[in-house]
Image (cartoon, rainbow, N blue to C red; front, top):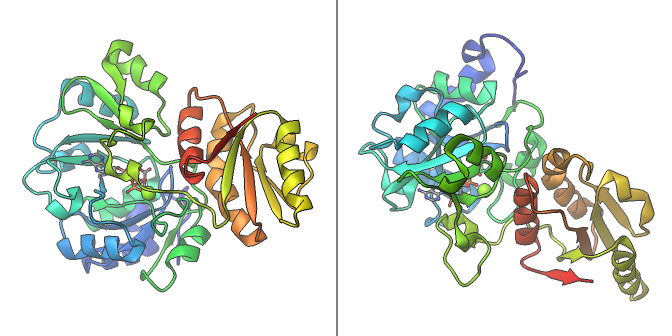
Length: 344
Ligand code: TXA
Ligand code: MG
């Protein structure tokens, strides 16, 4: 584990960052912090590194990777064209939690894009990630650094839990900030299509390109349609125990919990700080404050993971309004529940 304080100056020459970059130069993969979640990074131009990424997290090979860059010059060869809307979004949100899908350039391996004609690119807003890309001298392909199917890691400990013995090292830059993954948008034409909701909201995008120019891929919500982002079709973010989302009052949730506990089951509840004390259950875990949805996003995966340690038989979770970052929160919760939603 390479500890790096993200507030230090001149991180590109930091001895620990240099150490990590030497592994990247040997086509190995290492975990690194970003502002969203930890990533599992390898040289985007090395087929061997890309294979190692897929192997170490057990990722299906038809799910393409995001390529991370630290400066705009690296777009050369990576993408074949940049639409006007893409330029506006880059100026507004990079570095930041926005991944832009563009026509791929000739330098990009089929392995990165899983055979697609497009490539996903983002410039992360994390000084350690940017320094590591600079020190490595190449763009870094990086999916979230969890085992496939598990909640994404927001601390180096989460990465260790999932990938110990599978990768040579983790750059530990502390907890990530946003907590959910980047928003993925397709921008091959001037209309911007949201393929995965995330840290940058639909409202944020509309402010930059105009509200008529932002669409949402219908495949995100509608199970009958194939989502345009291959990763959206997989089960994700699942805690070990079955997870049920409940669209109802605290009293209703408590009734469901009581029924299960009478049958001898150990029950967990995923709630927020405001409502923690209204419930009775075996394990009650808050994810941030309901009044501040950003804090819910920030702690969501950590909360989902902590039910595993608690060893509960079933988890009930509250729903959130689908506005702003709530769209990303609900997208992740619905996935981790595998569509298991109960209405009062
Ligand atoms: O915040 C993030 O985006 C984090 C950090 C590490 O940067 N990364 C991340 O990567 O979440 P991953 O691999 O877990 O998710 C990437 C998503 C997947 O849903 C994948 O299918 C989609 O992006 N994707 C990648 N390339 C694509 C492409 N060419 N077209 C459509 N979707 C693409
Ligand atoms: Mg992921």
